[in-house]
Amino acid sequence: MVLLKRVFALFVLTLLTAVPASAQCLSQGEARQAVASGKAASLGSMKSAAGGEIVKAQLCIEGGRYVYRLSVLVGGKVQTKVLNASR
Image 1 (cartoon, one colour):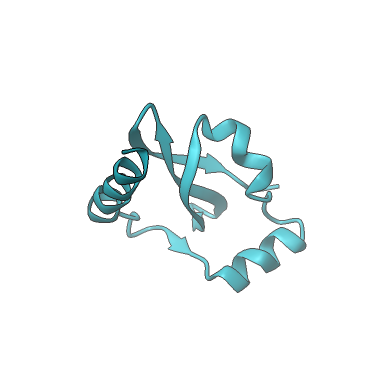
Image 2: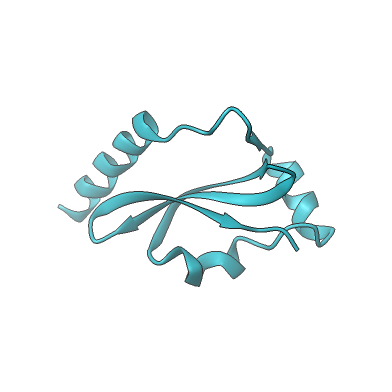
């Protein structure tokens, strides 16, 4: 049942999560490079601030700063959170 809820949550997330036009999300390689260079925080360092189970994460540039756009499972519901990742 829990697996079914997660699959459903991911499906809904895919339909509802939209990245603002002003955001430029990075590829995995670009994200690794930004973290390795110290320009952006690692995803692991953001886990406690997420407040739930991270089911999807993208490192993006919004307004000239790095942010993580996260989909977080909280109490059986998926929430979108944007956390500052700039160093």
